[in-house]
Length: 64
Image: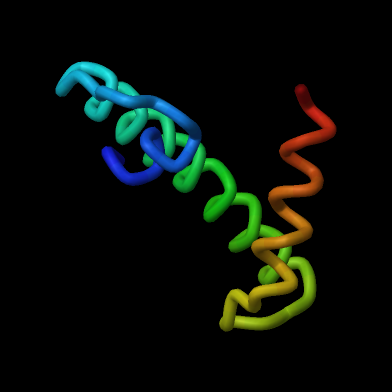
C-alpha cells in the first residue's frame, strides 16, 4: 500500500492511510470478483477468466 501511495506522489504515508487503502481495495476486489463469478456462471463456465474480471470492472465503473 505504501508503494501505491508513494507512486501516486505522496512523500510520506501514515499507517492509517495504508490501512484505509487496503480496506477499500479489498472491498473493491471482493465486489469485482463476485461480479466476475456471476459472469462466468452466466456463460456456463466454472472458470473465471481475465475477460470476466475486466468486464466486471467495467460494469462496476458504470455504477459510479
